[in-house]
Length: 109
Image 1 (cartoon, one colour):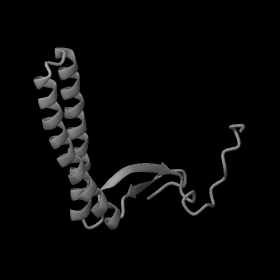
Image 2 (cartoon, helix red, strand yellow):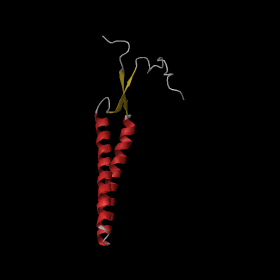
Image 3 (cartoon, one colour):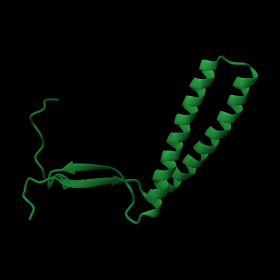
Image 4 (cartoon, helix red, strand yellow):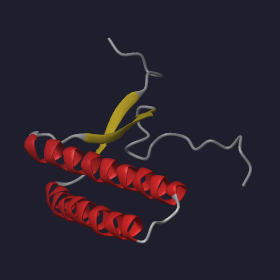
């Protein structure tokens, strides 16, 4: 039995068409990152760039590729699940999602 003041959890999800577009873009970002890392990495080594610059560049590219891979995995999971994969969840008071909850007047604008 639910009490009146218990919170409800709302899940925010990306729509299927948005995930399809995100999947295509993440594949592009992944391929671009791999190609960019190879081309610029070769230029850095051919021109004998400072070692610190090369390390910094490859740390940046590892971060770029990890982010693109994370986005790719999220959109694949969102497309495969019937209800989708939630981006985040929000706890709200009952009635708030219908617009019937009282506004918080304790905080002045």
